[in-house]
Image (cartoon, rainbow, N blue to C red; front, top):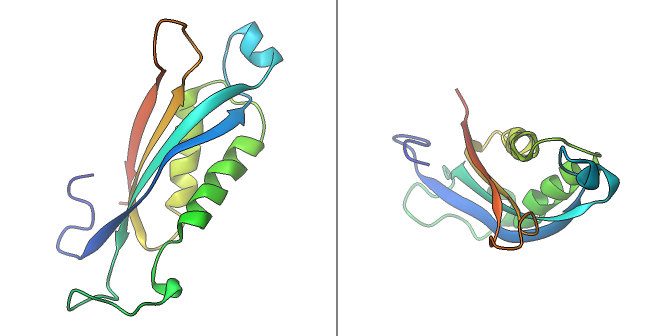
Length: 129
């Protein structure tokens, strides 16, 4: 996430290995039954509340991990999506609605797609203009 928040203090908020059951895919067997996905989210967050290196120890100054997980769960719960790319883009767009988030990197993996591969998927990155 290079260049995110250039000239400003930022922090990276992340969620790794979020395992959800999603209705995802283009193949008939994927449309018939939900499947396991593993989601990773990295957000570059502006950190203006810590101008001298350490900010106040207060929850309201940070993007809460719980809200990031809630966003991903909510997107997955919206219903069937054909493409992992669409799922990742939707999660990124939702995360970018927070004014403190300047960029989002989202990974969506399908660990059960092929028996001889650990996982397949996509990584997308979105940055506010």
